[in-house]
Amino acid sequence: MLKDKFGRVIRDLRLSITDRCNFRCGYCMPAGFVPKAHRDILTFEEMARIVTVLAGEGVEKVRVTGGEPLLRRNVEGLVRILRAIPGIRDIALTSNGWFLGEHVDALKAAGVDRLNVSLDSLRRDRFKELTGVDALDRVLQSLETASAAGFFPVKVNCVVMRGENDDEVLDFAAFARRTGHSVRFIEFMPLDSGHAWDRSRMVAGREIVEAIDARYPLTAVRGNPSETALRYTFADNAAEIGVIAPVTRPFCGACNRLRITADGKVRNCLFSLAEHDLMTPLRNGASDDDLREVLRLAVLEKEAGHRINEPDFQQPLRTMSCIGG
Picture 1 (cartoon, helix red, strand yellow):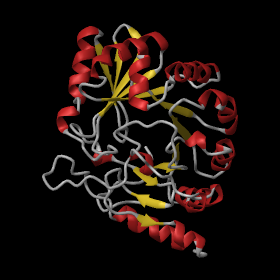
Picture 2 (cartoon, rainbow, N blue to C red):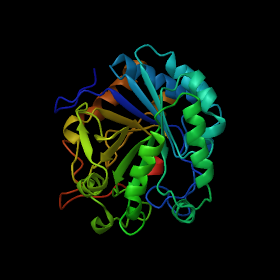
Picture 3 (cartoon, rainbow, N blue to C red):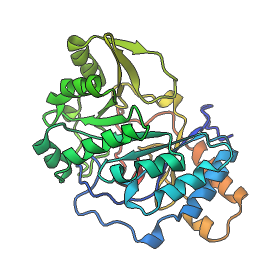
Picture 4 (cartoon, rainbow, N blue to C red):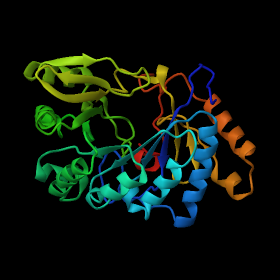
């Protein structure tokens, strides 16, 4: 197994398959971003080899991310390959929803177990302002299509930003109650495209829970310690919400995640300042043992926590779109 120096065992992989996205959310995609050339992105075969090595070391879950993963051709083919790897028991995919409606049946057939969809506003004009695309109706339709295909509930990811969409927290809670989808409220993190993150723009998870609980009483759900979300159900409704609070309630102590970027770098934390290169050894004929050693060394360097709340914190140069969610 892959174990860091603090005894945390890696079970969960976030696999970015592209750095491209057709949305331009400020906390994720840099303005003027130039995507990498196709030759500088891992092939599906290279990804499958990395996942096979990781599965042999105890990784059980893979989340396919981007950028927007459905911008890459034949994602379903990659999922089928991953599904066939011994030891992989759970495959999820995160999408912005634009292409999802036309892919859900194929994704289900290929073996995707769960879907996350990013949705930061339920107001059409604001959605366009936040993403640069007039696509709210299309994303909402994709959620309905996904439900009909058997992906229910979908986890809906909402990054809450003060002065931008924090006045929609109760609207999203009502949305969860009405649709049955699980809304995940996420604290605004210092991974923004302009590297201008300011704590004053962050809405604390506690504040979100208190606002919802005052209108719709909540009951806490006991979860797995390695889960990123604090989960709640409505006292009078079966729907669920979650709050992901990496800034005010870090969950680093039980983190079991590893990230592979689309260009073949290993990151042991979203906020890592260091990366370990897998693409070069892969393309230079490295053995599985060689790859395993790179992964082992990367995991050993995993720090106790992300240090966001420490005075010496440094924001990573790469933004979310390049790292993978």
